[in-house]
Length: 381
Ligand SMILES: Nc1ncnc2c1ncn2[C@@H]1O[C@H](COP(=O)(O)OP(=O)(O)OP(=O)(O)O)[C@@H](O)[C@H]1O
Ligand SMILES: [Mg+2]
Image (tube, rainbow, N blue to C red; front, side, top):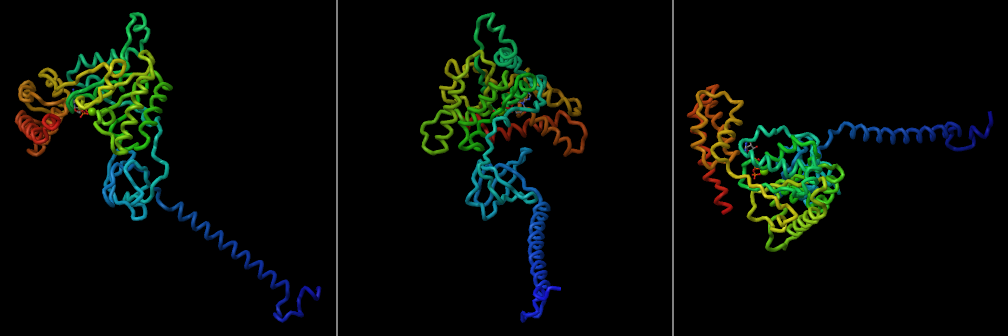
């Protein structure tokens, strides 16, 4: 053995090769400890439950109303660390169990026009709508027919409208009609809700409107349905706040898009509002949404139809629908549906499996009282 390698001359008294081996082992240990720490971190990350992505609809102090992908809304706490950062319209991450908001997703204000394209058709059929026969016919002729048979219009030499505007009191079937049209048509159906555009996609409204029309042209023949149109198209006296200016920009973009395509192009618009009185007249000028269809309160024949539709699945005992029709003058379709549900509850409370005329009459009175307390007609003048 080489005398030098044994390092007999050093005062440690430990041979040089043993010392080097020690050092190497120490380095190995340090490296392995680093790897263990990394693996522990990976392990913790893998074991941690996934976070839920949701959208903030409203912030109220240290709490927020968030909307989940399934449409459910929850009132949740916002974690101290992000409280000052979170505002309505943000996309955030929430804990899975408590749904506490713990992180804001930067730049994730989802602005993908594809998500407005209905991939799954609604289940509403024309037969689920009571009354409104003429209105249904008019919608089919103004919206669907020009998309499917443009040749007919060319031959006859008339121009179909660019779209229609359904207007009338709440709960009379405007949204229902659009849903039935979406179900019945083979055209691509894009659904946009005015109030969502204003609350949820703050800052992106105008861009989104532009992209949605682009998408509609790409997927043509297509129908763009704008529900609650008044949220973006009401006449404004002043546009002082930045939120108002933003809505104004969205509206201007909508007008520009409507002007930007021709009547016979294969995109049609169907819009709905229960506040026709406050709409900006620019929207209904000739060449824009100039075909107005009023969806009014149902007459007696329509009420009979609607009651039949909503009682179809109920077990009734000697119920005289015609008598109920007389008692429900001025009721909307939504009121009539509520009458059926309430009548069902009266039956359940009385421990009966079938619903009687008396249950319905009590329900009519109940809905009438509720209506009087929240009288929209008075509220809106
Ligand atoms: N003509 C109708 N036939 C059958 N059911 C109806 C009819 N009108 C309303 N309903 C019932 O009332 C509910 C609400 O109607 P809908 O959402 O279509 O009202 P709307 O006119 O869009 O009201 P709003 O102006 O408040 O948006 C429907 O889901 C349906 O159950
Ligand atoms: Mg509606």
